[in-house]
Length: 539
Image (cartoon, rainbow, N blue to C red; front, side):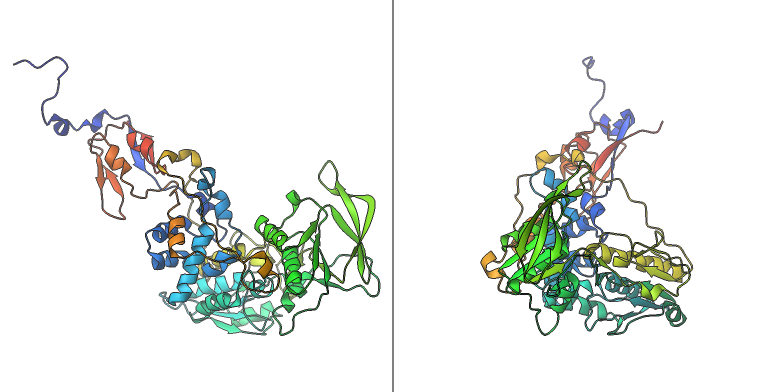
């Protein structure tokens, strides 16, 4: 019998005819760079460890995390979360609490006593790290994992650098800091305390390479006319003295001059030391204040006041003179001639800090400018074998940036010791919010970390911000949208009209049978994370 006109293929002929030949475009799975990964100064593979965390594989998530950052419990408390600023979920409802999950993993590792093992073959190369702050400890950690023999020399009694002497205990409890530093030292790193390096050239005769990671421990001074009885100190000294046996005595009325995070920390510390009035004097507006929003919000909640558009013109025995400022057309503060007296017992200067570069005075080839060292993309200075990072080089001064410098320097030093040049692998394109199919994601408000009541904060140095428990950390990790990368949701497998998507098993994702895929693009349109794209067929 003749077939109807519209029927041209017999039963089973779809397989026999291999309908993929009709295609002009083909779907291709891709791996884009997640915005959180791209924004992390420490170079963490955020999306990868979040994926394991949301499946409850906490130790595996932690091990992925510490492959890049040896201080997740520290960073989960002090990082200012550029990953969350970049998070695509922030355009849907609220950013994923990446930092909260990182802290949970770090705290869980301390509780479970997870450790890291050195698997590399010993290189018999010796590296000196100058400074036991975040950058120096990070470099020592990564260099040791690469097989090198590392010695840290630090001027302080205890390791940690600005993490210990610049960040108050209410933000970073010392037992947490000690636990993560101990894990680094347990790898076999040699720490020489109260050992100040003054001759880098001599050190190169003893070691094969040197990494300079001296923190910015010297507070900048400002010229402020002052009476004989005026009590003026710098914020770095104040915060450093908090690590001693006796707390500094500031008085009941304390003014802090500056607008950065150190200024805010100094004011919050003054409140805890008994100041009834702690005021931050800053010459510009809130929008131009370098202190991070979370720091400012917590300070205001604790009763710290801030005088915007103000500068200090004189300091007396029991008062300071403040002049009101105004911003000109270019946004620079200008004097107004309007003055006001503020009663104060102490004035704390927090107008920036410098690293001590005196150890470089006799080193040929090293250039400095504006208090920092010039380095190349590999963080090597102009003197072969001498590298620098952290507060010593031009960069934002945060723990996260410093830890990232330590890792970068370790890889560059490792390559240099092997007679090679380290090249970072090319980064894929960054996933965008527009590439997501957000219809598939349900509303899930972010989990808020618990905080100590404001009334209880000012009388104690107890930690202000708490962590998530397992259930809330799991929920927060599952809010991740997996931007630009497949998370095996089976959408492509379910919507393909040609049954051309093949499941390869858990963790192996999918393959496409191009013999039968007609290139309709349904899988691309319905992929929640934007992990599939259409590419023209080669003709």
